[in-house]
Length: 156
Image 1 (tube, rainbow, N blue to C red):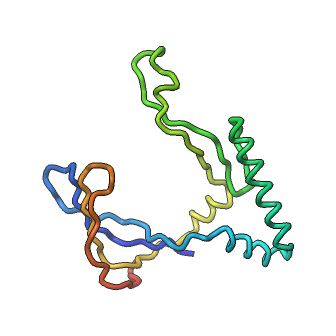
Image 2: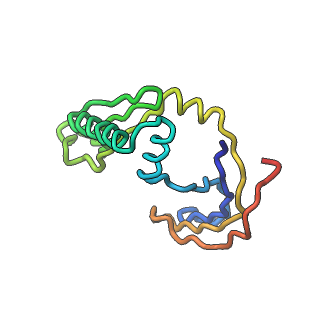
């Protein structure tokens, strides 16, 4: 397996000098739909599609219920899911309350299987330089430019 990337020419809006920088960004692949995941599991395990649906739905229910109660959920060598929050720091202990929480999230800590996958994965350049103008607003600014075709860098 290989993680594919492209080099993006980027101008950061918050940088007063307006210098052009080059940033390596991953090229996103296809997202596997639930139906495709289910079909692959059926083919690998030889179990009936209905059984696989029940097992996956049961797993999701167990994960959601336990995360809702504030528990972490370990999925073997795949990794661990934990509920988490992001909150603004306060100068005073009394000011640090639920009102400072600005994001609820699920934290994922990869397990041994995924850590080994990342350790052994290759990295391949897939596209010509793209241009990304970031205006510093945090919204990504404007993206434009041409892709110039896809190629694999033999030096990567």
